[in-house]
Image 1 (cartoon, helix red, strand yellow):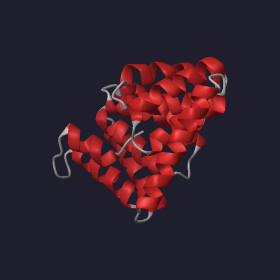
Image 2 (cartoon, one colour):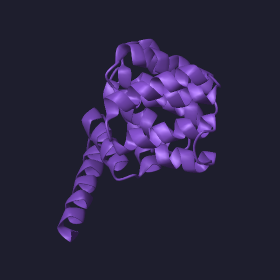
Image 3 (tube, one colour):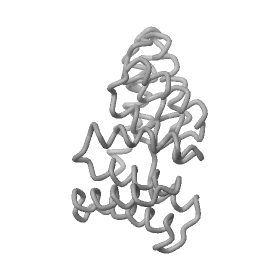
Length: 193
């Protein structure tokens, strides 16, 4: 275990050094940002993604990392603005649309989330997570029939996936047919973006 931690610390140190020695090295900044994200050091990753963004404004991976860093750092307004800009540049990018929809849902914009999830369901009809998240969004805006339809699709596609089951329970809870959960435990159960 100690050796694994030492290896990760060495990787962080090497990438930091590469970013310092060659401040125009996009890969060093981007890769360090992603490594810090993996280590759940979200706010620490932000400046590296921001720097990479100035160096390579059309690098999709930089945009993804920066959006995720914002979302996980409780900087939802920045995450949503970046996600909206990203969809203008890459309108077919499924991951941006999904992460933006989740961010909308987690930050009190369920109508916007439902709109994005509707499109995601059409583009990815075999994903139980997408159907389940669409169900949560529809339930959040009172569209009970649509929520139940997505819940049924997710159940059929998802089998016994624990993440899907949690989301299906969330739909029941929102619609009043399951145990009550507060918003904080709902977001924690759903996990990050």
